[in-house]
Picture (cartoon, one colour):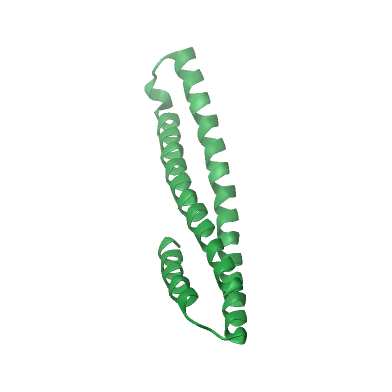
Length: 118
């Protein structure tokens, strides 16, 4: 998805500079708005997934901390440690990806104004 957004950004930057007639500009604006809707949908889905993983990671960190405080470091609950670590790592990567989506979609909004104004 990141490469798709980068490619589209290059495309729309190039197209926004071109001199279009009114009909072509409207067509480009309509196409741009459809692409923005697709990217916004992707961003919304990733926001939900990111929040879910962040919530789960926090819960597992709290559970792990509680069990270490109550029972000390025990090898019997090693799977809990591993699941907690996996959730924390996944959350970091989801936040990074969501950060990318948010920033690049914000950049694409500027082209909507640029194309619409002409």
